[in-house]
Length: 452
Length: 132
Image 1 (cartoon, rainbow over the protein chains, first blue to last red):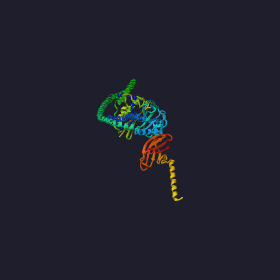
Image 2 (tube, each protein chain N blue to C red):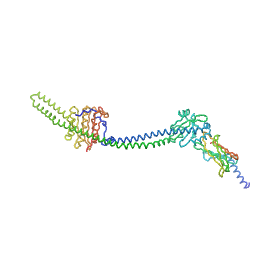
Image 3 (cartoon, one colour):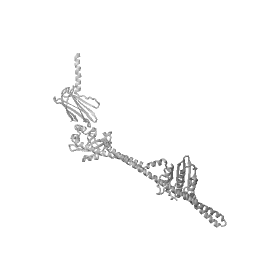
């Protein structure tokens, strides 16, 4: 006797999904350990490339900023500060000319694209962009701090700022500030602008140095471990196949045993009970002169018939009927008989199933059995319809009830698989199984399978 | 008035016109934005001062034509009254001239550019200025 599946038996995770052979093939490929291993390797390679690129850019950025700060400090202390005169700070044109000449010759270069010297009030004392000289802008907190306390700072230029309007169109720039002192002791802010392309170039250099090594190591690792994984996967496959063969053998043995028990019951106890029932009924009819005895005999005959029906239902459950000889329609009638006997209004409509493959008929029977069992035992339905319809190339089974329904997206209770156990079988046979339900709205189980 | 006299008189008028125009250092423009001044030095030498815009700066050209090569001159360029650049130069070529080019900062407002050159042997002085 099968253990009774709960109402959750109709809750496979794939309950609302449908699929065919192609989907099953895709799932098999995805589940292949070798495919998974190499996919993981490819992903690791990708992550490695992206990660190393990011890290090298960070390292290069740090290095470039460090270099820019060092260069700026050096220029400020060794070139700019010695050349700064009171005249420059005071805005004397001739002094600015001489300072400008020196800056153009010794400071401006391919690396240093622009310089500005600021006074504390935010006015530009000098810039190689001479149109800025004499203009005043507000200084930020960091610049003010450097003017007051010394040190240096670097940041990416905000080219939207008005003081940087002449730098637009030169790409990203890195600006570095440091303090310089004029001859009178006045503190000024020296600002140098560097091309950010240098950062990218350094990043590329760092990356070029490490990327080939990283990729080579990973590829060698994959090359070495790939065959091992392949061998292991083959062994796993073989082990799984052996396990499946054992399972099939066990199921077949169980099947044989169930069939033997069913046959023994049918040929022995059922026949005996049927004979007893007939005998009791006949004896009751012959005992018309003794009404009390006749009534008693009829009651006994009814009890035997009831036991006979129960036993027949049990036989149907223990082993599916001989679908090939008796046909699907008869088997479905037997299946719903106990349900109808308990007051459920049952409609069975079965189209001509002649010529269908035995496997397809067996599959429809199994699905119908599970669906009817769930509808009756767990959904407590009052109406039930079992419909087998056939179209060219397709056959369709529908089991519809008006029971309590359920949420198909909820996971099944542990240990109760119900229809879920049939999904793989249905997919392998190229069929589609769809279960539509919601709490209080009944359930519709629909199986479609291809036919020759 | 005979023909010869008329010819002499015409030549003299033309020379006078040229002389006046040189002495008053008229402004001429090679380019719309250029400013040029010319003049005579204290002797027979001519000078020219030219200022041209140069990407936010001013290109200054000072020129001396003494018509004698091999002369040494000390020169200075003034910017708003102060010496911006200085040096020495020697007249060369058939024209006996030298030319100095320097770039100065174009400061806010009007810039005054000055030129002074002194012949180290004769002491002849050339000076001039322009506003840019």
